[in-house]
Length: 486
Image 1 (cartoon, helix red, strand yellow):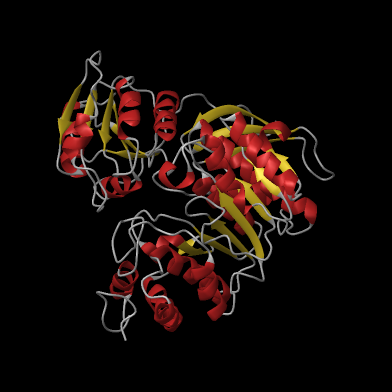
Image 2: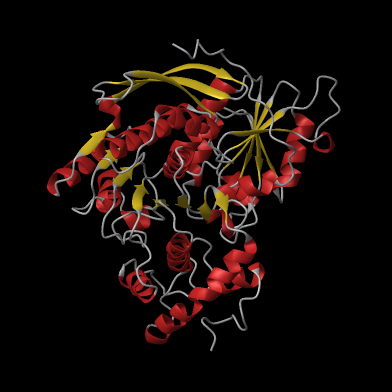
């Protein structure tokens, strides 16, 4: 029996596993059989997990929702816990290059052979559920079940789970207990599903906070009304909530080639906690300091409750060694894509920013962390994103835009991207290119050595661009750090 329309035969290798996954309803890519209007509910994933023996239970669980920064926050928390000696499982989405990146054991993506083998292991469960409710299982639900099955098989100590969409009805919201429910930065996204108002979006995200939570952690927020919704949700349960913006202070103290230094001040340190500490973070951008601060607050809460024991040395090491690609990631432009400038080739920065707020953050970070003369923007977006809002922001910072597309079924055509640059007062120029390589090549021919090329608009465009670039370059030193010994 075939588990879904369009897939036949066994899951014998990684490529057949991907074909099998993509034969279901994939709302990220808009492929596979699906209903006219997706029904977001928890009954299907709960059924799958019951058939697997509820592998989501039985270990320390950190659940992370939010609009921006939840993936980075998850990666930072995982790095800290791994540095402290815990066996970690990390589930995030979407992936950058391969599905295996979504399910990580001790930070390493699953090997392709194991990914295929585990898919084959749970296939009978999917078939049984399909037989009862044909066509209603999504690719993301299968990946969620696969992640918990994998964490159980690897006997991980701690699972760090990123919400896919929303929170209240996201299929990761299936725990009997969570040790920390983390709400990262909230902004406008998926308004067709989550609602037009920031308070509606916040309410859906806060749905991961329940009586089964030991504690909730609220990251620094841009929208006060969104923060109020989350605080009220925690009060209603009730669950103790740590407001990171109120409980911690940060100060950026310098940027070196290996990352940024920042100082943390705990307003009300618990016994054994350092009132002040300096940390190194390889991820760039002021927003990443907020994400790191949220991760620190989460670790502090887990330490205080006795759920884990993370010494300060492990906290320092975990922060200093975290890796999360395509977030203000810098590269040297290959000579083959650059003009023959005597001063060298321009730096390329890749960021997966895909809404107006994250585009603004990326542009601010390029100004603050990558000194340059002129900014050249390679830009491409997916079909459900606020293209014109992003274009309006880009027009305030760059006169050189290269509209392109990515290898994604929902990517907008380059002409549509170019048509969004309509500000009559903009003195710039937008050029149309069929793919990221040609856009990068055109930018490389126009940019001088002291210019900067920024690639942004979607993670799929970031993934495409990364394939053409050489090894990551060192960050330009903006301001040397103060003495990290305090």
